[in-house]
Length: 110
Image (cartoon, rainbow, N blue to C red; front, side):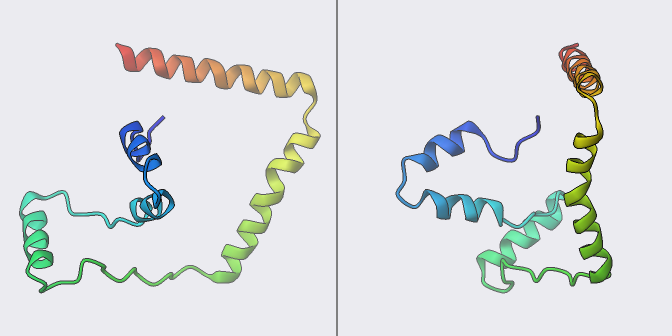
């Protein structure tokens, strides 16, 4: 499982009184460019105060009605599917998922 935090971050944050704020700050850190030259330029700009470290987020160009409809369907979909499945079918799906996870783990070790 790919995580954006490490156990070191968790232990370090758990000892602090402002741990919740620490997690919020971690979640909202802005991504930096991968290119070394662009990264260096951005760091210099932020350090000298010539550029704000908080870039504005791009506007949401999605159709809001479609987003709401999608969210509505997604919230109902899993529950409705689980209600329709028989216990044997649910077990078979879970068994296939476990096999896939173990196969992926085995291929990573090679």
